Structures are given as structure tokens and as C-alpha cells.
Length: 467
Image 1: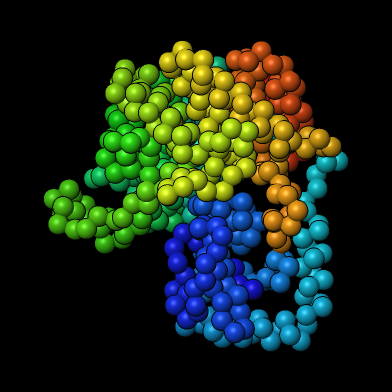
Image 2: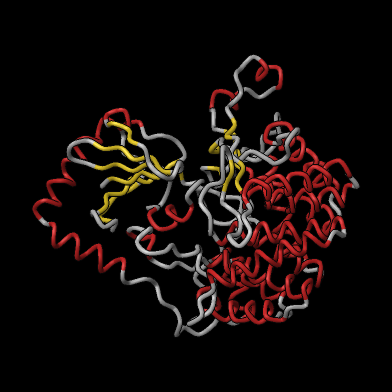
């Protein structure tokens, strides 16, 4: 079996006959020797988490049971036939050996239950250890706009006037907004930069990236009292509302495709003569929820009632399309709702509902948030060890391969903690707070391994009053 995970159809798909498949996020193709399955990583993040091999597109070779034999990222079309033949020959001659090795690898997940939780100071040092003082951001290259450590730095500056923390935020925001990552013609941020100094970006624009950076810019403008961050916030909103928003029905499209030729034009006049990159109009629950929260925050700070009203309208539209009583929210909605039971969708939508309740004073939003929290507890809580699995398990044999393997994602669990602390306060249900504390304990041994992403853990700890 051949599995390809990407955001676009593989070039070699035309060589096989397309057949129907139950999940529209997954396409299945067959010929007389191979079964090829293409997965849209945006629509099936649970598959991408288990089968992704270091980047998109991923090309993985699987056993009939769905275990990974090998693979990598992009395979050029002219090489695909030869690679398939090599894998088929290897599997035919060493079937038992390959199958046993794949099974052993799948059965040996990383286990840190007996590790000592990191000390606060050492964890803080590990978070900021990879800060790039020359170019801002974290790591070398490619450079992704990671926001959690910058929010942590803002919190620390606000609490203690730590100028080192202020410098980290200003250096990063100034670099991300003045170099290649930011589109100063149409507005909005690209997905990531391929160089350390934020140049040569991958030109796709994602809703969740822009939601996260909008929130960071607004907070930076407030906490640091820097007016240009407020101006940039308004420009991100201009991009999102012009290109991604459905101004009639509400909600935001998931992404705008990359197009090097279009973005190489550096003026509005030059781009007006070109066909703009197409927009994927799929409404993703978690990404829309993140934008609802960011837009409500921006609307409050900027006194923009129109933006706030659109955010509420968008929340209601996505809930109408994705929510089902007792079954949470689906991951996406286009012609109909997509896969259900993913943790990130429930956490993000419940968080957005709480933000809507605070913005409007309407109790039904609090009730929706509480229902989604209870659904997560009922279906994804690990009763034995604490913490949350990334998805609700399916009944019987509906899941294949690594989808049968329970996964606890570090960042997802930390964000669930932050939601459950808020739910405890809004609902008066102390059970939410208890589960939040247990999840903190469950994630503690893993935090030191997460580099700058461990900021999600410390932000959760601070929200829980354990700082």
C-alpha cells in the first residue's frame, strides 16, 4: 500500500484508476499491483500526525495492516514507478522481517511516565534557548512563526518588566513583519520562511497562522505600547476579511494557495494584472474558532463593532454546520460536515464560545462550551494515566493501522488545560479544574523535550495558578 499525505493531488495519480472512498478527505486509487491512498493533511490531521514523515508531501509505504515500511517526503513522478518496484521487490523477499520490524516500531512509543518533571527555571531556559537574537523567532531554518513562547515572554514582561523578554518579542515581531514572511501588498502572513532571516517564504497563507499572529500583534501593541503592531493588526484583518472571509454567510476559508509568480509582483498594480491564487473555501472548525477568538479580541481593543459582529456570526455559522448534539463538532464543513471526534476542534470551539460569551454576555455560548468540554471528558480522557487522546476512538474495526494507536499530543493537552481552567470558572464545575491539574501532571515529564513549544505548558501552569 502507498500512502501520500499532502495538500494537493499527487502528480502520479493519473497513472491509476480512481475509485470512490467513504471519506472525501481521502482518495483511494488502485491498479493491479498497488493500492495508493492520498490524504489531505488539513482535512485529516489525525492521519498526518501518525504517518507524516518529516514534511509535506509525505510518501509512505505501508503493509496491508497499515504499518509503516518506509518512506520520505516528495518523490518525483519520473522516479515513482522505480521506487514502487523496489519496495514491492523488497517486501516480496523479506515480508516477514519487514512486517515484524514495522510492528515492533509501532508498539514502542516514547514513554516518559517515570521521568522527573523539569524545574521551572530549567524549563524556562530550554524554551528560550533556541531564540535567534539576530533574526528573531526560534530555531535556524526553515523558520516557522511560533507564537506561544512570545505570548509567554509578553506575560513575563507584563508581570516583571523584564526587558530581556520585551526584546525577544520585539525582535521577533519586527523580523516577521518586515521581511519575507509578511505580504505587504495584499496583507497577511505566509506559512513559513525557508531561510533563517525570514526570506524565501512558502507562499501559502493559512487561516490558523494568521489568526495566531493577529492575536500576538494585538497583545504586543497593548503590552508593549507599540503603535505599529496595532497598525499591522489592522492590516492582517484587512487581508483576512478581503480574501478569506465569507462576508455573506460568515466564516473564513482555510487557506490561499501558494503562487510564486503572483507574489513576486511587489505592487498592487502589478498584481491586478495577474490571476490571484485560488482560495480553499473549506471551513475548518479549529482554524475558524481561532480566528473568532482573535477577531473578538481585536474588535474589543480596536472598538470595531463590525468585526466583532462578524466574528459572532462566523462562530454561529460554523457551529450550525459542524455541531451535532452529543457528538461534538466536526473538523470541517463544505458540502457537509467532515470527520468528527478530534480533540483540537472541541477545545478551539469551546474556547471561542467562551470568548463569545464574554463579548456578548449571552449564556448559551457558555452552555455550548461546557457541553463540548463534557464531550471531551466523556470520549477522550485517559482514565488510567490522565490527559487527553487526540481523537475519539472508533467502534470495532473502523480504524486501520496506526489510527488504532492512541496518541496524546503535547500542545493539544496544554491547550485543553487552559480551556478547562476557564470552564471551571464559568460553570462552577470543579471537576474541570481537577482534570486540568491531572493533565498538567501527565504532560510535565514531556515538557523538557518540546523546546520552545514547552511555552504552551508554562502558559497552562500559569493559568492554573501554579506558577
